[in-house]
Length: 314
Image 1 (cartoon, helix red, strand yellow):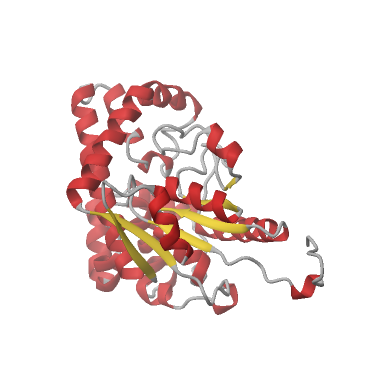
Image 2: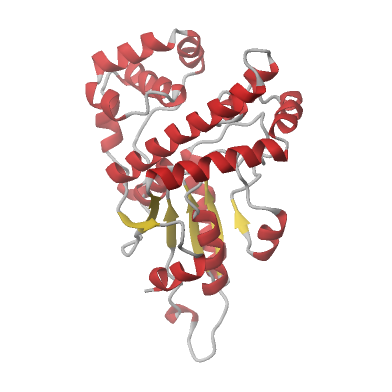
């Protein structure tokens, strides 16, 4: 631990951890960068896709200059041949927090993967490890049949789960089959021993009016394609992108892969990515409203990052 003149190490209080969340394209990354620079912080990415090397343009990763200016953690830590989950996120985030605080700097969590925020703050439920044979069977099954099974066996989980996310639906059905118990009940039994004691933890969750957010999403998608999303995806297909079912859920990449296979034109693909991204942003907002202990801050087109910092610092 770095010593501060006049204070023994045991008397040093670590800087408070900051949590910044919100839907895609809302502007949270720029806010986190400015805040980290202002308070002497380092950013921990809370993004389930930015962990993968090569998924750069489509995940809107911070630029090399931004990462040089402010240290970022949990970005580019996995190859496409590797799996990544919430348990790994917890372990690596805890390590990053300890390292950041040892330098007497402030951890600034920033991202839109709600499950990772909740997993870090509340711990993970006691769930059985994945069964390779059963997982393969479920992945091969028709997705509508899995949704129907989940609806019949666990209506509560069916209502709350993201039904457009095959990975989560498959995991829920897998746990039900392995344990014979409802997935929703097991998820409710959080491991208190695994909780991160953050008594002052608040998530600043940013939002915008729908027209404003949709316009930002549309412009971001256009920029991604102009920067070379198609070429990036074409190159990633040489490095097992199509074989990584989790990475293939990243909006933009799946649709471009389908375009490269001749399923639709480029113009149709661009429009589809915009639609899918707007739908995803809506699901993110719904998730944070249901599960997050959030302090909501609505942004307007006229807001600047400089204007927002005093509100956060208060």
